Image (cartoon, rainbow, N blue to C red; front, side, top):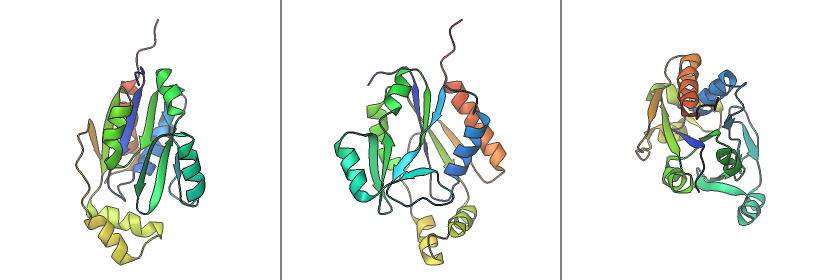
Length: 185
């Protein structure tokens, strides 16, 4: 459990643009090998807008039984997992960044020695537009998703993603760089 690195949980409501902001920060930090962006395993086919490792429900269950995940959760009828290789990255002193459900932030805080939480939000109008653009839900389902209240979570930074992706990505990149331990001289 004790590792010198920092696990950064990125949370927020559907349509806030978490994956897009994570992508912008990843692009900004591409040359820093001490920052790792986790590719989640999800029981959903590959598709636009979310970089994940698609898997079947059975393969996910088998992997979970083998201990392949550091964290798992269920949301929206799907299963999500954070691969166990984050343990080695944290032990090496890296910053590990993952898009999580707010429901598993407490589990992350118990599992990892250093955890920071970033909430990415956006206005309801912007979120509705983004959810509709995905094409996975009809208007009624998208509105229901917007109306759903998520659990509040203690966090270290809130990024309101109503401006440009560059602004939100830069805010996340700065936060992540600040979590790095100084390089010994």
